[in-house]
Length: 387
Length: 239
Image (tube, rainbow over the protein chains, first blue to last red):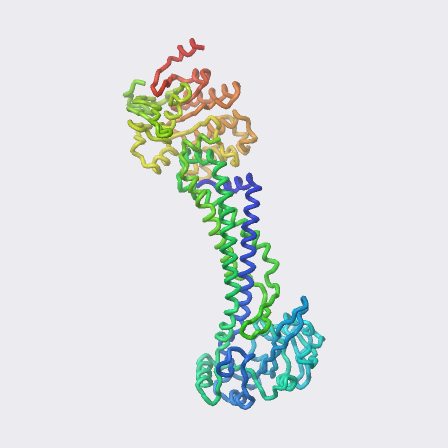
């Protein structure tokens, strides 16, 4: 093998063109990592939101809680079903909930967005993993108090601790902030179920009921029972299935990501190829000498491909480092199922990292292949004559 | 030129070489026979275009004859595939070029080590061989220097060390003093002569320089693709 230091030092010798190529590749990787980090973050949020043993019960035909209505008596019947798990105190883990979309001003800019305000009973937090108050306290039942996720507190006016949130003209005091393991719950503000019903003139109305089953078998049995009973007029979905449906909203971001990746990568391939063609042309005599010394065509090919890969890997590393500060940064997008804001964070998980590495490898190999082939095809006697 | 020695390192039999230039056949060597025995030091002279470099390329297996056979160290080069020829070259030949052809980004040590990377020697064994070769050419103190930090003569000595390091049967030198001043050229020729006399290296050297040619055991003159052997005494007389 030709030592790798030969290639690395040669890149250093032509540092201007090498640096330009590295920066170009870095920009491509940065843009791609960012876009797919966005999609990955969104997917992750919806993925961690689904508990396998939890069922979401909605009116038949409803695609989201926001367009589902269940009356109070039917909701009570749900609580009487067999197979529902209980908490330590023996209370059934059955959470009737009312979901209202409130158009609220964003903190950043002068625009408004739809925020989900959820009316809940104490059972709600029991059926959501990782739910915990991080500042202030829980809201009291029967009064206009609410708790907001830290992400919503940061994103919406009136949702911060001790601020007042305007809900159709009625002020709700934010008395606490919560987190819920980066799930979709972190895109909501919670208040008392009955108070929200009175405020929005929807007393006795529930949007959905969340149930936790004792086991996977019980979950399946309950889902079948609820969905098949014509009197209920309800359907029950497991939470992972419900959120998987919503995760389709990340498809648009992914499509844009693929488009950006393809277009920019083609540009990067040309940049790398240009640099490598110049490298091969300027080192024709060196290539001829290596061939005369006994290095075969394959070794020359591998050597120049490795040089091209080294160039791209340096660019990839730079691009990833440049994107790193955005990892975990909060952002939001419209959830086209609930028509409300879904808050999530950039997430450069293993999928995005593998994608970035694959991208630089593909760019490096394709960009370096043709120049490297040219190097191997040189006639030794001609190459040796090059000055 | 007479052929037939059993111990010949280089044997050319009926070798012709033609090139195509703008669809015109240009003969460079015609029906050439040559024997270079082991331990010989041959200087090949002749005007530009007489076929000197072609001769060297054929002996090195870098080019193939149009007709005839080239046998080096008992191997008929025509019979070898390109990959086998490449491998054979790394085991049997040492090259010395007019422009030294060192890798500018590698140190003297690393340049000399290059041919050994094709062998199964360990790193330690390679280091020993490289140090020995650099000691022979008198550059053991400069092994960490890059070519740009060396004079032309020193660069050529590194190139000679690289040519020597795998203990080749045949050294092929293409104008080894062509880019050097008189003093440096003298040193290089001293070195080549030492390699021939002390280490019994067979050397074929193409040169335009009569002073360099005088240091060889014998001189061949190429005229329009045909050899004319010149006695060194005659060369002396010619000045």
